[in-house]
Image (tube, rainbow, N blue to C red; front, side):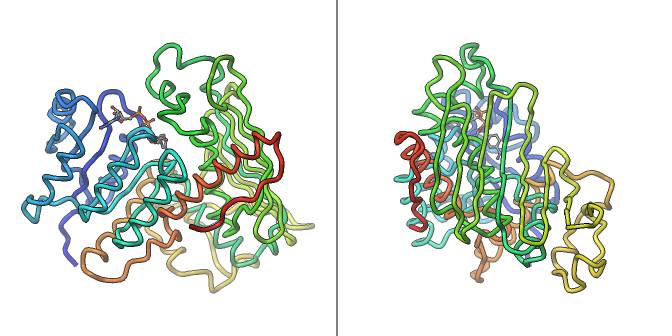
Length: 396
Ligand SMILES: NC(=O)c1ccc[n+]([C@@H]2O[C@H](COP(=O)([O-])OP(=O)(O)OC[C@H]3O[C@@H](n4cnc5c(N)ncnc54)[C@H](O)[C@@H]3O)[C@@H](O)[C@H]2O)c1
């Protein structure tokens, strides 16, 4: 295998942008990937200035159209291996589509795009062209999330009866968008964010956490999408009661008006043999609750298979995943790095003409992104019918 780092091109990320920065740290964490180019801003002049001022040399482009077009004639060692889309939701579909058609793999921020119509097109194109596609559901990248997935899906806690998957924030408790705050402004605008504010922005993370850890799908739901801040066009509080594909029930909830809550994402799963809890603000530990026993707290890096709960034959690759020793905390950037690392493996296999997974087991793929949009559109339908139980489309 070549040890040349993969080349990554950014779409978005200039002038006060947020999520590009955790990504760029995570991209460079292993030394096997690097950012080499970027179309960083919608205004062409500013895009070039921002690239020239980037912390290390990258090739600036006036637009993502130019960056993608230039790739066709770029020398082999300068060609992009994947693009990273870190623009607001309304600028996901177009660059993702154009990159796939130009033979470039795509790592796209969530939610996948603005609506289900766009999501349908993205799934069809990625299937037709066989291009690796990742959607940035960050919290799947925590080792503890993968460990939780193993515990639940191997049946160690029995059948899943109930899940509470939540993402609670407080930063939009007042009308921040009226101050011109960049991240707030587009998130409350249906043309730029999509049909749901809080639900699309962070409810999709809670949904994805539930699906990834349990392996279950939401089949039917009853939605309440509230707006507490006067004059805001989209929901800032999102409460969805769900039926799951195994007959269990779940609450998928998100809020941006709970003052003092920061990035309070977590999951509680109640199975027929015990329960599991995990919170991303304390991401190094998974707690297991069993009947008539003291609670078991598992730290990343300090799990001993054969301990009376985790079987001796726990997957070796999960146990051996490269991490720092327990107690040196991993967190948000490490989760992003684990997603990029897994995506890198698929991109390298694809480039070498080999079979690649991109099956949702290591990161969310384009179908998972589609499910996020199907969920949001079903929530909107249910909410308009005063929370009536509404079936959710399962597959495209
Ligand atoms: N995975 C996560 O945990 C996570 C966290 C935050 C944001 N996000 C997602 O990331 C995306 C970006 O969010 P953010 O908070 O960083 O937004 P932001 O407003 O901070 O940054 C967006 C960037 O996109 C640029 N941009 C807009 N249109 C462009 C165009 N046509 N060409 C080039 N650049 C363009 C802006 O200039 C800005 O640099 C959103 O989809 C959001 O939902 C994900």
